[in-house]
Length: 193
Image (cartoon, rainbow, N blue to C red; front, top):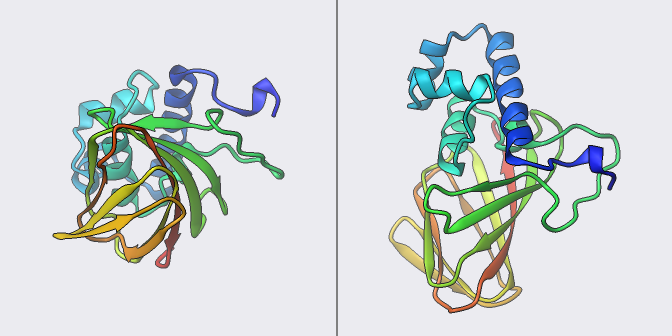
């Protein structure tokens, strides 16, 4: 992958998210105030994101994607005809507590119905995800280490190469019970897009 085909800094990613957010908002004729209502993100923060002045956390990006009813990769992914996804070269977004780093791999299209991500879960940590928009189905495979996946109050223990599928439009989370990082592979299908 050449240097022009991936994000080299958080600033470039922030600018891309901002430009994409503004484009989607304008295409839909939504004001910043209306977007605040849809996402629960303040107007000030949304304005800073659109101008590329803020580096939004994973939680904020999820709120925006859910409010707009688009896949998260619609805000993060570059559009190219042929794509190669190399470890640590994609768009990486951190959770607010930095327990989880999510790296977008592929999306069917800017508003596609399927996307894939790599996630790196720090040792002895937990990432709590809010419910995604209705109709999102999540498939998670543990590629390295172990992880416990919480769906509502139920905990599912997964070893390396184990997978789980669940409706992600409910509260869920990921727990790394070990002293080594865990690597997860996500496939998200948006059945309502």
